[in-house]
Image (cartoon, rainbow, N blue to C red):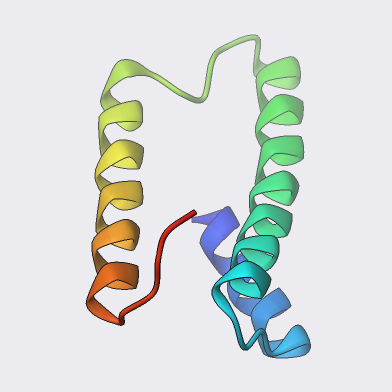
Length: 76
């Protein structure tokens, strides 16, 4: 959720127009979330990503690829 919220805010500021620009925005949002995840794991001593959440993430990525293809964009 943090990655999505962060990516949305970055996108509003940068207004990406191409798939490449959108990927860069998504990567930036993911980096922010990754930093937060690592810090949470460090402080709690427990993993944030589990087999259950990994399945949900895989489904999200698959849906993004399908959406890009529906819009005529070529996923890289």
